[in-house]
Image: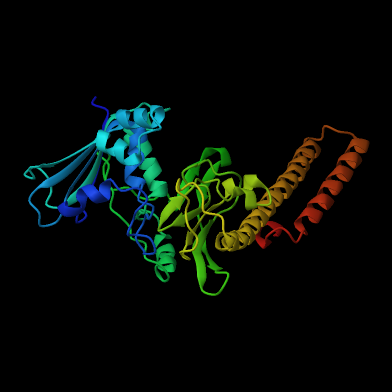
Length: 373
């Protein structure tokens, strides 16, 4: 009813002596060049575009007071929109209030962002716990579900070369922590069967000048068609174990773009010279990203080949079953004795043609042995 969202962590917090300086700085981050996530110094301010008031609070471990900063988002946007004579420093001074508050009702150390008066955007997803869960399960550095048997194999592959830094994230109103959306099998009525993920293919991407640029995995299944699960499908990219862009970021590198929606897989960037852009919807374009893409293109072509092979096998299987059904119907007609001698010879000839076609299909090398037998 108050249209408020609060995100709180249990980190060590920001020291009181640094609180105002660090949280009013733009484009400054001590994380650059480290393994820490984020590095542009603007992420905490993204909420300005989505609410009427943005409140940042923190308590540093060992300190008694909680420091609080309030941004009047309406005033910020009005100043930036109407008065180009103001400097950024003047805008901040006119729109931001900082104070200390008693820490009795707060954790001993934390950082939180509160969005007050959330603006209604599209489907109002910022106030929809299920939509937030769905988004975080894809993008955030959260663990795979215990119900996903292949998770240990993927985790071992990744942990040999990188630190996943997985977080426990809980959403008010939803039981349990947020897990990645992957499972061993998923119901797909349009395929008239479950989709079963059978094995994991590791993907290793060398850098342009030695070392490793990326590490990833592909989940294989029967490739019966586009997966009806947008939260799962697509070959995706992650940096710092956080997804960059959407599930269609790599679709242009498939032999047919539709095959991206048949695939399930992720590539984690390791080379620090492969850098997400400020919006985190793509990467900065440089030779190191081009090298990554060149290798991913090979992976995409291999997946495309699997898709085409599977499609071809299903087509031949349908033709085989068509000839089989024709034979059965003709045998039934013969058994009923409802046709004359000339009709019998015609049906026998047609059955012989169907059998010959079935032999041709069964002999095709593109079919796996279990189908040919």
